[in-house]
Image (cartoon, rainbow, N blue to C red; front, side, top):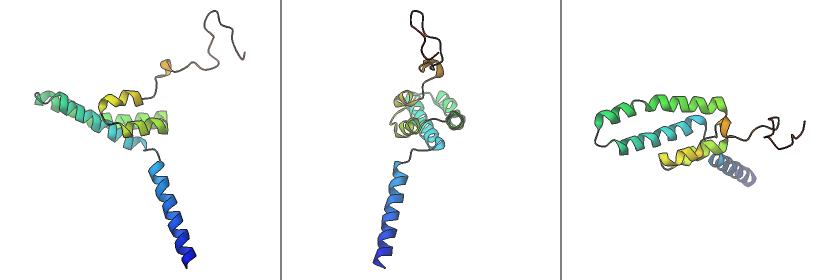
Length: 120
């Protein structure tokens, strides 16, 4: 009986730890992103209610598109966790994956002039 209780306790604690260490899914990251943008809009447009309302009306579609893009592009756990843990909208650009043109070229890309080609 004690052994069964011990096994259940150990399994429960392992399961609890696993849940805490998992990266958020795309919807959770998109929710955080949308909330931080909303907070920024609220701060930036305190004195202009019509501008604030117009900007806030875009939040639901922003959130939906963000989640779709995350899922389609397969954002990494690190990217999703960075977004989820961001404290302000200003933190978000640092979390976003690099655009393909900003990433390093693939190994099959031609070498810049004056450098020898590798692997070919």
